[in-house]
Amino acid sequence: MDLGNIVGKLAGAVGGGDFDFAAKLEELGVDASMLENLDIEAAKTFIEEKGFDLSMLDSLGLDLDDLIAKFTGKA
Image 1 (spheres, rainbow, N blue to C red):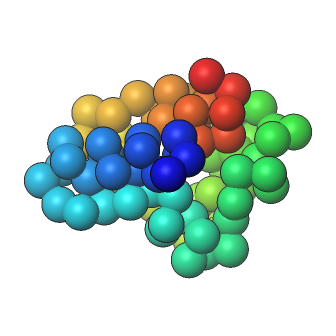
Image 2 (image 1 turned 90 degrees about the horizontal axis):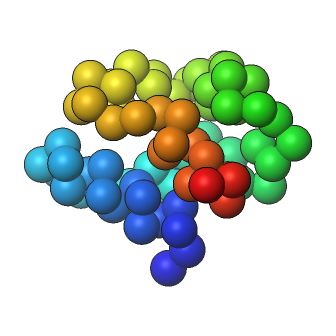
């Protein structure tokens, strides 16, 4: 299991569900390599343009910058 999956499962645990951040991004056609050359704000924009509403993670109190940095291997 890669770090993105671990972080995604952690997000699911905090939210009380089985949410998997990495799996959801894969469903949208996004993998970590697509975000490697983007800064955090550009990565957020890219993910949202693919149809993922990041506000739900923010509402769970998760640090989106940290979550995306870990998913992309920048943390």
